[in-house]
Image (cartoon, rainbow, N blue to C red; front, side):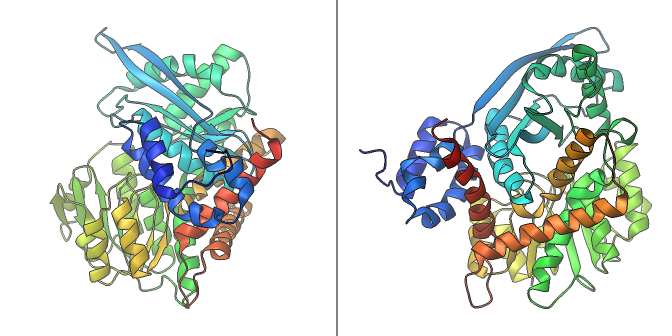
Length: 451
């Protein structure tokens, strides 16, 4: 077969599955993008002849390494660490570090693949990467977490740099863990450089980074509703998760006049029919961050709420939904239930929280549905702004950053409209995000030749 011959989608995906056995999350992420990209590429011979999608779906490199550390009882523990550097066609690799027992090479490859398009959508010069470990910080002492982070960075430092790869935080990695890793990087290299984002404000961090992903998802949701002449005032919202993204999404919805009904964690969800207002959100933030508590304890503080063990919140009737927990938490049947209960808009705060069946259900129903690569790009956008501030040895004021975040989310929304307008008032935001992100990366790759 000649290099420029076109293969169809099933043939392409069969090749992806064959090259990536036992990696379902990665295959799912590629499938979701490829379904839209193949139609877009139909009459664009250069993308076919240069095998652009095949090249994007093959990471530049996957670094796997051993992480040894000593627990408080003197036991030697061994974890596995990874850094997936997917594509740097438009800038240094950029993407978070995740510490969670569910972390596998497949999960990190899917996240790095998604990150490539998400970063392109922001308009900032950032490539796509992701990293992490199957280390579980829950139940560990601060000193154990410090020792693990130092050991992790002792290997990772040789693969990253301000102009090479700039990691950030993700699930299980917050400001504390970033601090431990940055301290070890500085200790090893004798360099104070912007090699990580999500840093403390005292040592190179950016204002509003903590709020950015959740706020950005709500800004994107508001932009979608505006296309139908609506806003969030008076709307009921169902949110999953209770960490950084979920609580700040809830906060911004309340600020814009909406009513938040649910939050969740791995144990189940709470439903507060009175609404989770700012006081309650602050309680959840403190409970989760400082006490490392579980969401079920919310009902002890606020008896008007109910806790539903082992369940997700998608059966609660609502106007809008924001899945902000983890991948594949919203399944096809959940999507059908949301639609049956009157949900008119979904904005993903997590990465790939909706499975392929759910994506197809939302698209078929023609509701307002924003994929994570578009709606949760606010976090990495402010990380990119943190990189700029580090390079310039300066910091911007909060008002400037808030406006930049709003402008970036509005710009992403505009890009989605450009490629996702299906006529008749329906915007396919999945298609719009996939094509807009792909085109920017693909055109850069064409400019570089076969590398």
